[in-house]
Each structure stands twice: as C-alpha cells, then as structure tokens.
Image (cartoon, rainbow, N blue to C red; front, top):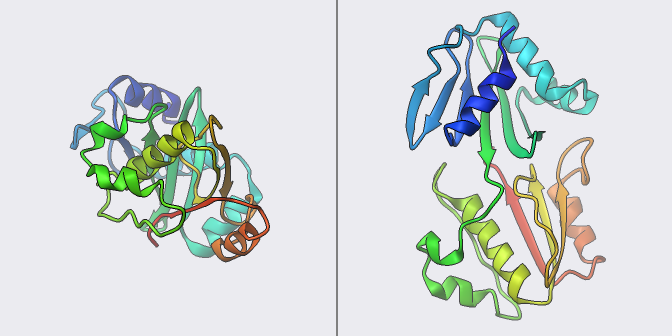
Length: 212
C-alpha cells in the first residue's frame, strides 16, 4: 500500500496547498500553483486508491453511503494538528482524491488585499455579504478572515453552516457555533440549518458550501 501518511507529511513540509491522488500517477502536490510529482513515491494503482479511500472514510457508513449514492463526497479530516478538506470522486470507476490542506492560522485582514469597505460592512446591523470567485481564488480564506475579525472585535453570536467545516474557530469576543451539513453530520441540509437558525438567537449567519 502507498504510505499515505508519508505523502501527508511531505505535503505539510513543502507547504503544499493541495494533494492529488489519481490512479496511474504518482502522488502530486500543488506548491505555489505548480504541480509537483513526488518522484520518490510509487505510481498509484487501483488497490492503492481503495485503501486510501478506506483510510479517509474510516468505516463511516454514512460517508460511504453518500459516496456510493452520489458518486462524490466532501468531508473534513484531521491529521496530527492539521485539517484537510477531502474530495472523493470517480474516474473510470476508481476513486480519485483531492485533498486541500487548511492552514491553522489566518492571514490578517490587511494582508488579503480586500478593500477596507468590506471590513467596515461587518459592523452594519443588517445586510448581506457575498464572497464569490473561482476555485483557489481565496474565497474560504477571505470569509474566515472576516469571521475572525468579527470574533476579535465585536460581541456577536456567529452561526456557520458549512460543507464541510474547514477552519475551526475558537470563540473570543464573540460566540461561534460551527455546524457541518450532510448525512450523518450536524445538520442534514442547509435548508434545515437556516430554519433552525431562527431559533438559535444568532446575530450573524454564515453559509459556506462548495460548488456542486
């Protein structure tokens, strides 16, 4: 079997943003937007892909059912002190995995290059902020940096509905409750989560979902 933990350790050491595990190729890391094969690792075979699938699903029947029913799965995974966003899909009826490494620290709001008017909008008593963009454009980082800014500077209750939860926040000046959406998780659907939020006395509701 492929030494998946060695792949994870190497990705963390090289400060990779993503790990690509595809049958017929060596494990590949995205580092500074470049795709780098791990030359010291063997080419992944079909049996490797199913063993890697088992490593990340860990016998969770709900996740396994979702994958077999929908033919894709988004979930979070913790390795050592690092969180990963795991996407599993099929290619030629063989699992394909893409792992996103979630940083443990968020950049300061000033480092994001977002206009300061966005930060000032977080002080409004009501309104709607949409964070949109293409893949790898920094949507999740920007959104979590905004949440962190509110958490540090305001006294609010923040409720997040996410699929999956990526960055784990700790309550500071605000209270933060994070809920993961999906079968076998905190809330079945986004609709259920939004309806229940009306009974949870939250000041700010954050909805973050992956495309698809």
